[in-house]
Length: 460
View 1 (tube, helix red, strand yellow):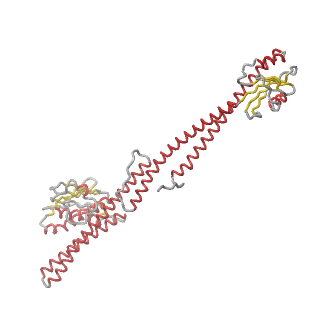
View 2 (cartoon, one colour; view 1 turned 30 degrees about the vertical axis):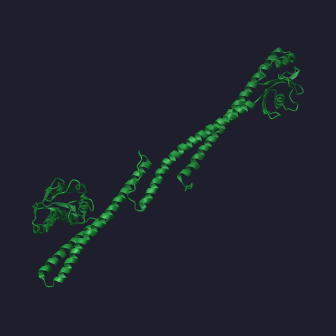
View 3 (cartoon, one colour; view 1 turned 90 degrees about the vertical axis):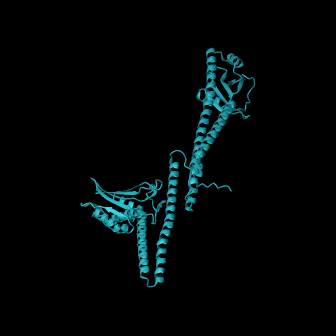
């Protein structure tokens, strides 16, 4: 089915405006050239006739004996193939002609009448009674002559033919130029419209949920190429967001199901165990641990939601950073001991005062130390170092480490590497965001089999 040609389209507007303007300009130029050529040709013929008339009149005036010389001049006129020379009597009739044929007495001679009135050499262009176009020039003779004037007449049909030929050439040139302009214009418009149509089609697919669709990027760096690149970048971002959303749903569903299953299972076990205090205590511990895990996960998800929506704020004040680090380390020492692991941390005596949010920074240290204890084989080492304009906190574990392939993605939201253990996958991402809001940096280094080191640098 053919597409309808809508005048609201870019192509239609170009045809209606640009092409019409070009056509009008070309037609105006052609008309001006055509009229100029016709004027030049007409003036050329008139000048030629005037020159001949002046020459003949001059010869006759010099001789003085007009009648015999007039007849001789007309009979011996050597340009009979181009024009006709005739003698006009006092009564206004052509009495002698170089062709030997007497003109129709009914033919008017406006040039002769004008010459009698003005006394000057005059010219006239018109049509004979036969319809042939001609031009005539009349030059008066002295009153002493038997003849009133000499008159030169020539056909201008050839001039009209030449003018028509020029008009056809101009028309052909106009058509050629218009065709070239149209083709170039169509190519130009298509080079714009075609990519825009691609963008429109891709946008429709994007709106229907097809985030993998991309537009082939053209060469160059013009506006269309930039638009396509921006669109592809937008599509890539939307695809990434969609993947993040799917990963979020999958990760959260999995992470919520695990503790809920444990809570449900141990609750049923406790109910069925009756008065067995050992089983009851063990069940309650599991329920409490999994509840705490759920609470931590919900807090992380809430923080992540605030970060995504731009509602994540800090309550900054002057705080002792090492006090927050010490509390976080102390909190996890007992947990590490129960898992036969050791946390080594010698807190410096000097206070490390910075301007920050103590609760959020404690959250950062808890997340980092929790991960370190989770992945460590035997030991977690925490150090704090004072630099000139910053404080550097390092947390190092001796665990399995991170592969080179996974390392760049570890801080990505919801990422879980091959060696990861249970968790939402957003804790480190939230921690990095908190550190960034304090104008600091969070750096992760690791090698597979050699543990991992997290370095937090915060300005004083």
